Image (cartoon, rainbow, N blue to C red; front, side, top):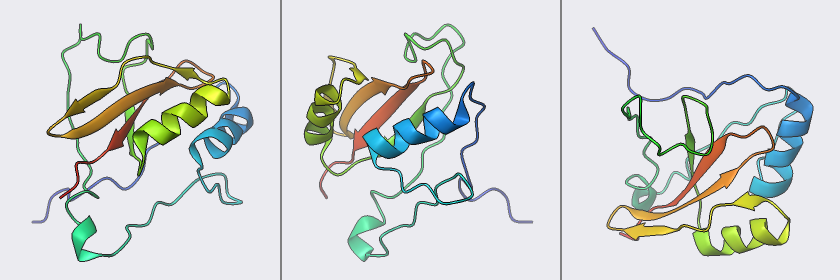
Amino acid sequence: MKRVVGVGGIFFKAKNPEKLRDWYRDHLGFAVDNWGGVVFQPSGTAESVETEQTVWSLFKEDSTHFAPSTQNFMINYRVDDLHGLIAQLRAEGCNVDDKVDDSEYGKFGWVIDPEGNKVELWEPPKS
């Protein structure tokens, strides 16, 4: 029997879904469809297969990795130019973490959305 092979969607509750959808559209460039969500399509190139993976990971209950958010989850989005996006988010007045990690796994930065969710932005390493 086949088992889970990937992530089909990310779903979470919001105090003000319309405002939060607008924030993700305006600041992270989500192409929000009329039904209120986004479908991310892989680019379809052979070179992109490695960087278009989805990671599922668990953290210990007392981890501070999601702080200052108090949620039990954090969503990671792939980006093409982390430093450029962070600069743009700061210019737009978003709550951007000062920390940026650059490692063998790529570049990581964080922004807090209007409802206090910590969002991880990831620029995969160049192959």
